[in-house]
Structure formats: C-alpha cells, structure tokens
View (cartoon, rainbow over the protein chains, first blue to last red):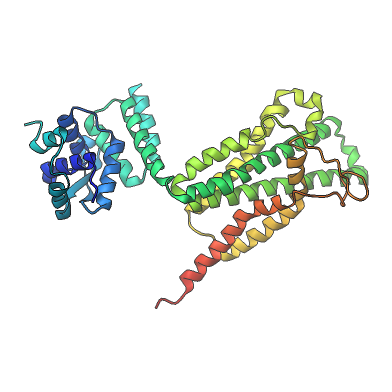
Length: 105
Length: 289
C-alpha cells in the first residue's frame, strides 16, 4: 500500500491524540510539529483518502460550545492503520518524527 | 472585513456536504482564524472536492452534451426570439389602436404574433428545464459549476453575431431593447427554467405519466419552433441562406433545412428524462427475489 508523507503525518497525529483525535486537533498537531500551515482542504481530503483505504474510521461527534455548537469529525486509527504506519515508512522524515515524538512536549 | 469574510465562508460552505460543512465551520471557529482566512480555507476545500468530482466522466459528459451544444443553441435561439419580440412589441405599442381589432386580417396577424411568442417561449422553457434536470441527474454535486458554465455560454454565445431584427437600427440603438431586454428574456426563459430543472431533479424522479406528457408536449412545441431555431443559427451567425429551394423564394415551405437535426439535439435531454424515469419505475416495480 502506498502511504504518502502527509497521510503518514496524519496517521501519526491521530494516533498520538487517541480519543481526542478530530479535524481541528489533528490540524493543530501537524502545524505545531511541522511549523507549516495545514489547510482544511488538505486535511479533509486526506481524511477521506485514509478512510477509503480502511486506515482510519471517522464519525460525527457531539456539538460543543467552543465550536459554535457544531460537531467534530472524530477520527480513530484502525488496527490496519497502525500496522501500515509502522511498516510502510520505516524511516520517517524529520517532520513525521516531530509529530511522532510530540513537538509540543 | 472579518464579519464579511465569515459570511462569505458560511455562504461558500453550502457547496459542501451538510455534515462536512458543520465540521469544517466548527474547526475554523475553534482555530479562531480570521474571516478572510476562513473563506480562503473553505474555498480551498471546495476546489479540492470539485477537482475530485471532475475526475469522473459524468460532469464532462454534462458539459459536452448539455452545456456546450444546448447552451450555445439556446443562446442563439433566445436572442433571436428576444429581438423578434422586441420588434413586434415596439411596433404594436407605437401603432396600437383598439379600433384595429375590428379588422379580421389585423386580428389574424396579432394572433399569429402572440401564438409565435407563446410557442417560442414554451420551447425555450421546455428545452432549458429538461437540460437542468439532466445536468443535475448526470452529476448533482457538480451541477452548480456546470450551471455557471451554462450561464456563461448562454450570455456570451452570441458575441459577435447579429439578428435580422437588428437591421432596425432605430429600435436597437436604445439600451433597453439592445441590451436589457435580451438579457431579461434569457434570464426568465432559459436560466430560471434551468434552475427549476435542477430543483426538480433534486426532489427525485418524475412519474412516468408526467415524463410521457412532458416529452409529447415538448416534441410538439419543438416541431412548431424548429424553423425559428434553425434560423437563429443560420441567419443569426451571419451565414445568410441563399437557396430558396425549387420555387426560388426564401421563407417558403420548400426551403432546404440542412440544420433540422438540431431540433433532435434539443430534445435529447427530455428523451433522457423519459427513458430514465421509465427505467427507474420498471426497476422498483420488479419483484424482489
């Protein structure tokens, strides 16, 4: 299976966030780690791609006040996603490694 | 600017799927981005979504079979009939006297003019409505982009061409009949019916009975309006017909009509609606095994 760099970043960010993985949080995680802006367009189309490959599962969460009462698109990495992340890119780039190790910490 | 940006972002987000729209808006609110950034982000996502949709063959089929050929023909036909109606309206308004209705020949001419306007209007509405239905049926999520292209073809398709009516320089020297009236005519009799067709398609399929009635009616109207449609293309593009047929006279029944197949092109959206409606009904009425 082909796994692009950005897909790898997203899988890694979603893995790190665990139960708190959703659109805005993943985006923030990637931006903090890479120091580059992550567009909503890239984020959502990549989420669709990963879901299409069966590497993640997404669903609509509950609305929250800080989001103006709008729901989150929650993300969970599947077992297949975890396996792929570990196997497909054995030598992650500096950016991926930063996300993997948690740039914020 | 911030509020305007958010307003534009909200407006643009209607081009996204409802569940995605809410999640994206929520993400942008949570990220506390500026209005202009929110707008740019939403546009970026729409562009990516549209690019993915246009990788499919159906939107291109809609452009090739509806937007380009039918949009162009509707552009010519609507301008041709708008100018013809402008000429008739201005003529009757200027010379109108109620007493003239007492003359049988006058009444007959007036009836022919009104009948022609009704038939041509009905043809434009029918062709446009059926085109709108097919645009949405072929690719619902790209229908708005296809509609924008359709509107562009409709309004600029006749650029650089003219009509016989426009040889009346005095009438068309005025801004209203030269510019405003044709645009109004096209908007009301072409663009609005296309939108109506898009809406019809989004509400589900027609009943077979309605589809058959619509197809018969539109075929009838097309037969009545086909001569004008062909004239709008042949004469409207400036290629004057010089062959009057065996009798040598122009405008008579034996004139050659090399463009008669264009009427069939105008009918294909309605044929598609008819076939797909009957097919759909036949499928749901099949016994489940």
